[in-house]
Amino acid sequence: MAPAKAAAAAAAVKAGTGKKLVKRRTKVHFYKPKSFKPPSDPKYARKSVPSRVKMDKRGPGSAKATDARFPRPPRRSTPRALPGTA
Image (tube, rainbow, N blue to C red):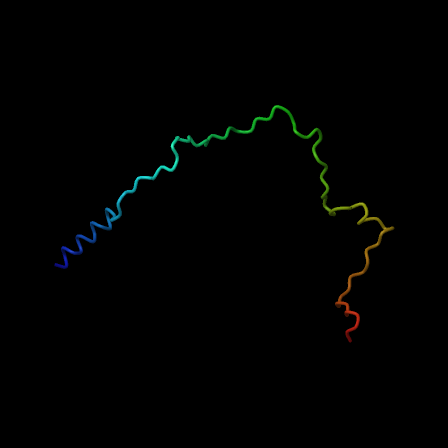
């Protein structure tokens, strides 16, 4: 009995036990899916001038960051105490 049961289980695993279902149609007319997307082939540039690079090696506003007339405030090594707390 055991070998026959094992053989039946092996056959079920190999073939599968479920029935193949037919997809139920919910529309009367057939809709052909649009799957083709042609590659972009622009005939003219959409922007007249390319945008300027705003980030250089010193970061945004680099002229102001290196100007001696606008010194950076010193960094605090300890956090500030909130007003009203001791």
